Amino acid sequence: MNIPYSDRPDAMSPTPNVHAEVVENIRLRRFELPITGEIMAAAYYQVESGKVVLVHTEVPSDFSGQGVASRLAQGTFTLLRKTGRKAILRCPFMSWFFEKHPDYADVVDK
Image 1 (tube, helix red, strand yellow):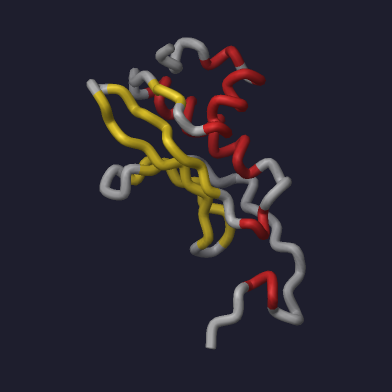
Image 2 (cartoon, helix red, strand yellow; image 1 turned 90 degrees about the vertical axis):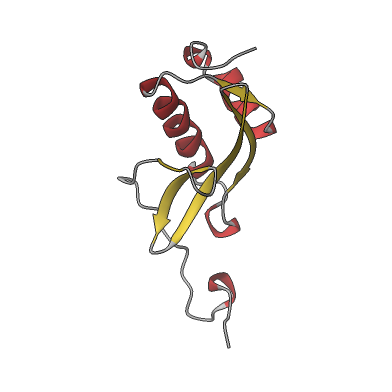
């Protein structure tokens, strides 16, 4: 029987790996940020006209409010910048993050 981590009686609040880096999983069309063990946050995308369309961001609820989504967004934008690609933001979180961090304007296609 599998019991969700947060429902275990011995569960403590897990701590995300602060040294993990965002990687791209091309096969699954997502950017991944390892959190702990096999648990990860992900930013899903589609490719349209050669641009990366960010459509959805997921962070496991046990890690909500710990800055994981922001680290994922920062890593995603940095990786896109390094590879010379542009992003179209259809994910509400990525749009919010970009509003707070306009220094990624060179990565975002309007």
